[in-house]
Length: 308
Length: 283
Image 1 (cartoon, rainbow over the protein chains, first blue to last red):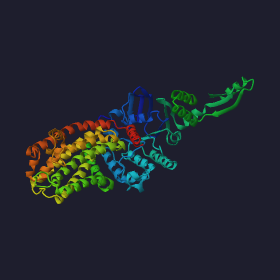
Image 2: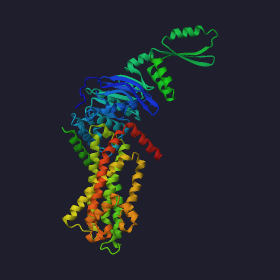
Image 3: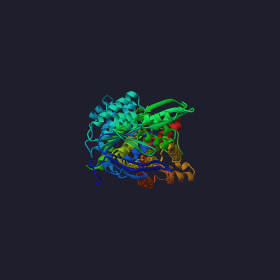
Image 4: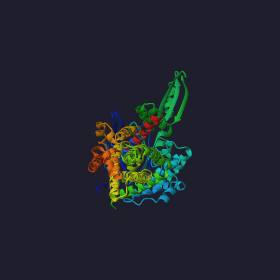
């Protein structure tokens, strides 16, 4: 076996990753390294390229340029041994609908036997909260149950790395909370690194120890939820109306700015003055909003301004 | 542990579970059995009809061809349909995401399709022998011939199914396979002796395996005197096996390459795209 199978080195190492579809650059130089263990969220607006990155990491898509190592191996050359060490949970999986839940779990466990000691079916179903549904057909599960089954199948071979791609899309709040609890249970499993993609800041803050924000084709922010929140909060947003026009200005020293603004305002033209301490949520929402209206470059610049 | 052997073994188990699922899912069984039952009933009504001065009825003459057609259609379409649907619902992508999953998936499909078809073939043979007069199935040489034709037919039709299934990438495009197949069946002498067709149609019919599978079945099940109805007044045993083998060899050579290409192109976004297209087609 030529592939290194030790857990030394980072779980994921991505450097200058680029992806181009036709003449459209989706990724323009993505860099990040994730050490083993813990949950990392890859956060970004829809269409930012999260799924593209994950598919490249999973070995499902060829990249245009850059270097990528997943568990010490280039995904473009990963063999079955490498494959056995990762679990994949996709957004929407409707496979094997006619199988009974327990039969499917027992069957998929079989594939991992040459590589690892897989989970026992009953123990695993118990952990993901599907013990009662064991005899049911897969297609009769609810959306939340189905996704929990997907997680069970993802971790069945005790992977070193687990990908969760937008795992709670389309969930009602109850299913969502149950799923979040499951992820918390997973983090107690030893030695499993989890990479979660989401477009929901709230979810990223709840589940991840580290958040990477992807926009405009590269990572524009990287840190723990606390770090990101603090860097966003150092900036204040001041807005006022002058000569019938609304003005907005971001600054770290709101007091000095306002003093200067009012000092030059001899005829009382400044009205409706407001000062907002920026939150990470506000910064992210502005980013998403601008991104969706097609102003991605401006969105990235402004986000940087607000969080740096 | 030998991983390749393990993948095949896991695939075999998968095939057994899928067979059980097919046999216990009423919609699967009905969708498959209803058309077959209709054909057999129609043939039963044809017991009164005759072809020229043949010693058995037109119904009896056609029954072996139905068994051959069942193998041809079932072997090919089951696999095409499975590969196409499993790409849309993500079963194939799932297989790709687990170690050895693709091999396991394919072995499983081949096993379950074969099991299902063999079972149906036995049932059809039983029905044929009971309902239709004049079939001859009383000697070991006929049993052997029957088994050989069934085996050859399965191998060639499953491999053709694998080739076509890996080429059709949208459920809507299934018609591109079904329609030509129906055309081929019409000129393959299943329901009426091929010798009654114009010669140029006979020539085209003889290119495809459906005719030869039907011929092989008639050879195994009809009195030898009936070979007089066939082209060249003969069962053409050697040619029959040669043509079926040629289709099998060519398809088996191409199939692994096409299946690998198909597997390489699978990703979450390609599955999502396909599903979106399908929904647009319905909407």
